[in-house]
Length: 176
Image 1 (tube, rainbow, N blue to C red):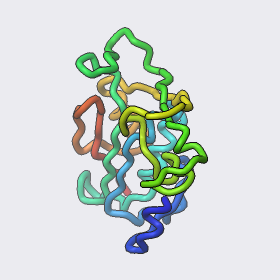
Image 2 (image 1 turned 120 degrees about the vertical axis):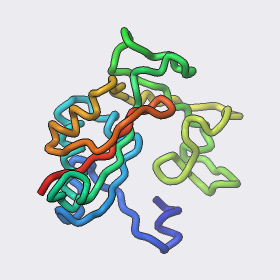
Image 3 (image 1 turned 30 degrees about the vertical axis):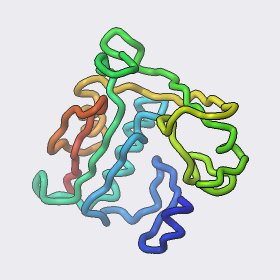
């Protein structure tokens, strides 16, 4: 957020995905990448999608209004390093390892006290070179067709959907 705010070429904010601070029906496009799958119940996941859909310009016919692109982690990842697939739990904790330099320490290339929330590295940023702190992050791994069902339950419709790099995605809208 500091980086985006510091550039002053666009607006940036931190918000609650269940209660977005944007006007109803305002936007032509919204993007949600790697957010929805962190909610621990279907009700909360559907509510977060409903919140996104509420910000879109409603369609009079499917496809002519605002659209949202939503990405979530897939259960079907048997060829990835994680190896999840049918038969595995859909609700998992995934370790997130932070080098101590990013937990209140100083990183000479990134600035003091950088963490992922304020501009530091993410889990795949490379092997840490000093002591680490590990956090467990909750993920709901979506099955094929589940994201589309959640969009419909949230009051939307699906324009297009698919699978890419261990993620399910959907482009969706809402009728007015």
